[in-house]
Length: 183
Image (cartoon, rainbow, N blue to C red; front, side, top):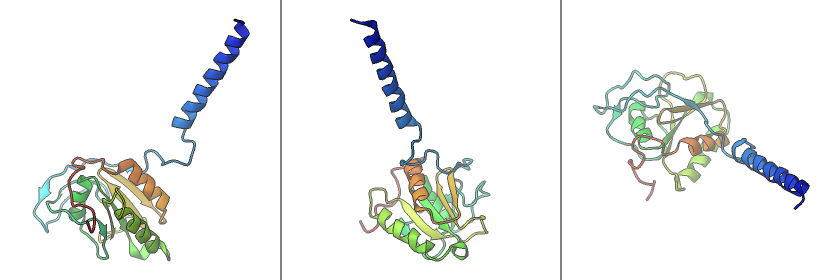
């Protein structure tokens, strides 16, 4: 066999491997963004008496820390949930989308609500949408999971979806919590 044919074949195989590696690991776009959000300090996961204040928390909104023993139903809330109530849902692998109503532009709550309606009907239903009742966190929207936080200045549903892809179920007790809404 001619050595030139082997050389050309080897170069072609090597090129195919390089292209494959770049497609799989090179962030070629179109897929979820890896590492969406910022990792937060773990403030523990102890239970406290229902109705009492937890904290202090190292992030706003909190992504871990002292919380009530009860869990909230997944879905859309029109009144603010206390952090201590929502944290238990994060411990069970869910996400909470917090929004500051006065900071949302027209139509953004509708976009978040439409996203939520589709999400809670899916296999990845462990999501809560709630107004924020605490002091200003500096952005219209914050998305939290256990030890992860993503601030958004607009209702970027693709970023929320990427955050969910990265962090859904990544928690100390991912199989607990309430069942599917309406199920």
